[in-house]
Length: 316
Image (cartoon, rainbow, N blue to C red; front, side, top):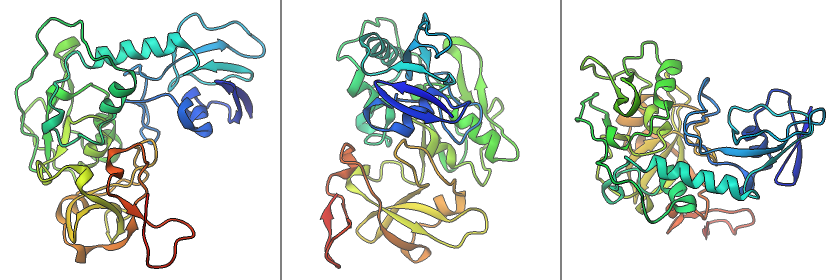
């Protein structure tokens, strides 16, 4: 085990762990944000630069600081390393610049975007963004592409995090989409007008941190803060069958995989569970899913808590 100190908090982690993984073991506000890193996807990370941190001390053997900010998701820890995240003004300023860069071409269509309310870019812009932009050029735009009956692609919103590409690579037998072209012309596409129909392809929606990939079966039906997310499961031959069903009354509006506190899916689900099972009779409803109070989804959301009187509900 190696010792690393992040914002004054010391923790022991396994050799080979990254700074971001060490910070997540500590938890709280010192965890750097991540828009491209995904713990269950091999090769992810190092693209969005939102997780930049300052290494004030490289290791016990080499106490010199690293000359530049480093991506915490791809930088391994060393014994005796000291890292500054929210305690370093330079890191916060750099993160603000990264947010400004991500918003250069991102359209301001949050009022009509299905991702609103659970968008990581919204959260990042609220915490580190500026109300003004210095960008004067025209925003990048792309032609609409139909990639199948279940998934809606909004390339104008894409931040090229590559999560959907890694998901298709590692969960499906034959990936038919990827990143085409280079520079400001880079885009997610199928090159030839292919339809993405693999049985695990719906997981691309869950891993997307913005509204670039959305559920066609849920499109414009409701805002997520009007729905009640419930843990549910069913017997499924293709996946674990463990999911979150988003309900309004007794009606299921959409089905997603269960996510942890960092918005990452623990167990991926198949398209049958996600798109075709929208009847409450298809599921065993376990109960309300825990929602952090910082999320707008927690509005009007109720769940049972430890020590509750049986049969009563308390505000989350």
